[in-house]
Length: 441
Image 1 (tube, rainbow, N blue to C red):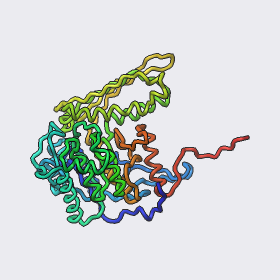
Image 2 (image 1 turned 60 degrees about the vertical axis):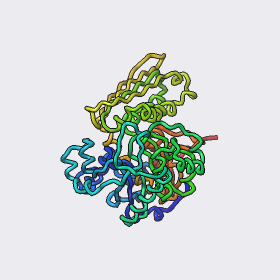
Image 3 (image 1 turned 90 degrees about the vertical axis):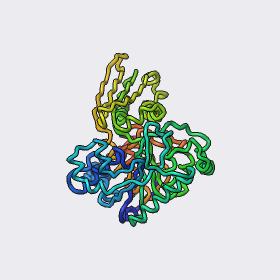
């Protein structure tokens, strides 16, 4: 990456955020929180961009500015919202339906939520079998629908008098699609859209349209989307950043903390059994085996990457890893994740770690939406394009090019994020070696 002076990163004017799945639980929780923060009723808890600091120079210099000030991120007050959905209701009605937040908190931001209504979404039920929608774009082939999305983005910019827009996929998990020939090159991808090829999903159409309009695109779900070579190449040609995939929130967040600890202490792993129960729309979608396979591929990739069994065969070559997700409507958005971890230590003696994480899925995901929107806008203002692997901190299955191995360790990811910000702003990266040692020859 190049060095830039901080005068080139000033965020002038408003920033638009277009959300695919505007009426979903994550989106309405995020929006309610932003409006509550603006009115002074809440703090942006969970948001690294808003509450996090970044060390500049040696620790002894005690220079720890807020990240949002250091990187001149767009103010939360300068965000303008819009998006698409397959249900024709405003965000107030959708937030009430989601039942993530209590009525008192929703009522405080009622007018702001009521003012937000979605544009018609591009949707085909075969990609999300357990969802139905009646507020959808009709007519034309997939290329035509991609062009409709482009037109929506143009109109949003014009109506709100803004130039900078970020598009984020907060919609449901699509079925598993293996990458194949139609995804490899841009000309084949365009032809496949025009031929209504079954391996071109709606999320790919949104990604392509966003990049076409010069808008950074973020995939918050685990399905195949902006990481296909055709779209990666297009993003680099257009000079647009892309990032994904699958917001790292509950159980996988825990895995990316515990598994680095095991490897750091050279403790062995025999097995890791993970199961979840949740009852929101996400749980209903994942009750379909094809959508679950997409999620399973994302969740299973973490341990192997972190533990590196090829380097440590005595510790990690034979562990058993199982992931289950169970739809249980009474829980709603209150997800519960159980982990049973069988480990072994000195002389091979067995031990166990058991974790029961009772969390709210959308409460954990909401600040990720904010951070990613602001950091992707920062990336574009800095001239970054293509895959933004420095934002892997936020994803279960970080997208990457074919030459690189993705990083899953949460703390290495955090260091990479902050060092990218330091380098982009023209400061030295932090190595955590604060002293110069003299070595005798």
